[in-house]
Length: 195
Image (cartoon, rainbow, N blue to C red):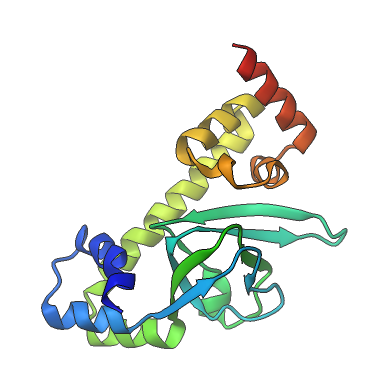
């Protein structure tokens, strides 16, 4: 259990000084999951079971519209959190599906465990507030990019943010995340390769 939660503890320590008791409780609050490539972790139409912290691999969260088209909203790589916060807090079915793009390992923090952690150690609320603030800022920045950046600028920004993702994420998912067709993204990549 210690090795699997080391990266999480390091991440929390960037914002909080942990006592040995707090660290032990934190490490034991999570369920460790090893998930093979392509497996659905959370399915649309089901309530979200918890927040997920990725220790290795890559998860993709997407929304499927009425026509059956998938729209990628989020990638989570090592050191990132993901999960449908609305579904978790409102106890409603999620509209998103989350699945692995490669063999992945994650730590699942159920809503019950999260509530226990926050009740027993209220100062962890600071850590989660910072995580949620960062997530909101990231989403706001992405909205601005979608409105004001060219397609090529969005792709360049994506490559800066996720420098290794193209090695194992199919082009169609990257295109969906960027709000363009795979064909258009291919044209951008060819044009950039010629430079």
